[in-house]
Image (cartoon, rainbow, N blue to C red):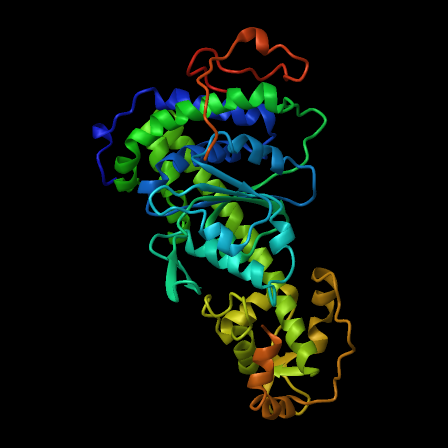
Amino acid sequence: MTGDLEALDVKPDGAAVLAEVHTALTRYVVFPSPEAADAATLYAAATHAMPALEFAARLVIKSPVKRCGKSRLLDVLAQLVHQPLTTADISAAALVRSIPADEPPTILLDEADAIFGKALKGDEKAEHLRGILNAGFGRDRPYKRWDITSRSVEDCPTFAMAVIAGIGSMPDTIEDRAIILTLRRKAPAERVAKYRLRRDKPRVIAVGDRLAGWVAPNADALGAIEPDMPAGLNDRAEDVWESLIAVADLAGGDWPSRARRAAVKLAAAAEQEAAESLGQRLLADIRELFDGFTVSFMASRELLTRLTKLDDAPWRDLELTTRGLSDRLRPYGITPRRDVTGSMRGYRLEDFADAFGRYLPDPPSEPVNTSESGADLHERLDGSEASDTSNRQTKSTRQALTWESDDLTGSDAPPERGWPAGSHGEAAQR
């Protein structure tokens, strides 16, 4: 580890403060795993060091269906994070003008599936927001706009941590910069307290105050620390988890081991999900290409070239080769073979029929013309570049409160969870 933890002002007891945050989160939200709850706790803490951090990790909160607790988790996090900027819909211009360079907020974007839940192609607002969220992961990546009043280029800061919640997956480029929590509906035996603004918000705000009081004085030192990362993380995952693990090392106790365990488990789950998602994306893009050119065969090199030219597609960034394409399609029972003339090796549309039917919900709406050979396609595509391109186009004032035991006995509170006693409290049950 580089940096000096010994020089940090670690009082009050960081482990106890994190335990309070953990208790506040698990009181109202059912997490899919202990590691997910630990990740949310450490993420809330890391936001208070944001002005000094190198990377602004994203926290993606998603679920397969509604009523899984995403909005409730956002409600609680809004009282725990640094300078929350909460919205369910915002324009790109409004977002970048809400991010001061010296004191960035924590963006809390709910209902993100309404923005990103459909194809981005042609959706200018979604594309701009995605670009800003991607750029804001690192420093010195301003959003440039032309100011018509001053007739000059305006540099708008983008660096800010962001919590993004919605049904289904977010764009690949956002999830690649994120810690991903996939919530699910609570089982009958899983109980959490109801969150009531007048009763519970001041209590959670007080926990957020104590969290800020512990992290903020050490922000500069935390930003300079490069913690030892657990084995198994790729370079991007190390960037995402760096600040959370630094916070855990600062807190001490069992938090360093918990943070690294959470990083390994959640990053591995995200990679597995991404691999499965990429497979479906590949099938969908291939189907679109076959449908768009109304052919029954594409040479391997031609198909790969067309894939890398698709807008908002990951294939160019993955540096996909014809061998890599074959490897990705093999699990679906699809392998390259010769066209009907035997002169060209590539892929036949008929070989994709089973995979399209099993893994892609919406079949092409137009019948496919299978009369054109691979050689005819190759000749026609040389002149189709232009048409192909055109077709693919102030945080509230906080009150310092202590927990009163006589406030914790309401019928909403689950018997297995209680609020911490005193200013720091006891470790939450795990």
